[in-house]
Image 1 (cartoon, protein in one colour):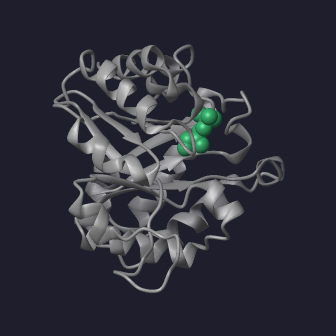
Image 2 (tube, rainbow, N blue to C red):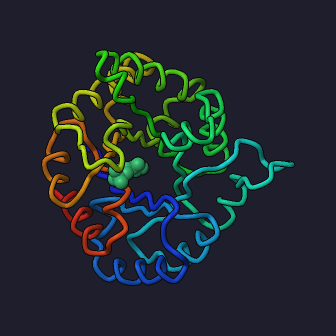
Length: 251
Ligand code: 13P
């Protein structure tokens, strides 16, 4: 049995005050992380404050990091710093970073290795554009991302990793993949991992769906055989919606 993981990706939203208020409010109501992992990925300057107030159930993640330990990389964030301030997760290769900041699969692969060097748990994002889906190349495209992004990782690392399947056309658009479309793509990802590694690794790896997830559709998505959680943008900004979605994951 894979433990579900519900993660909010706040992107570039919320001030420090708003974020602290949110964490204070959700902490009183989140179910135990014996049953579900709850994560909030916030902007870097407030990560330390959120870690200090994360309580028993919530865990904090960053939204990006560099693959070097340190250096002349103005504006970037290092894995040693994230480790040092107690951050547990880091989103890597979100489609917005791939699209707006030119992140390549090669850089993403280096970042995943770097995250593991510092004990951080990567949430690797993959997913196709509308054009790719319409030309029936989704499985091939996503497979290629997974192969390149996981290059050189060992089985124990892959078992710790979380993959988020986020079709780009479903992000922030209100268009959700149907539960069958999401489950099929996630099964295809699991098959790639089965081929690259082994049955046990494929069965232990947690794969989330992301793209316009909200309280009204999460139950159906999580009810599918291979969907182990959700990576949520817009709907994770509201306290009540976030709590409802975490509770939806408790079997
Ligand atoms: P939305 O839930 O706002 O569609 O965003 C999804 C996403 O990009 C999470 O990483």
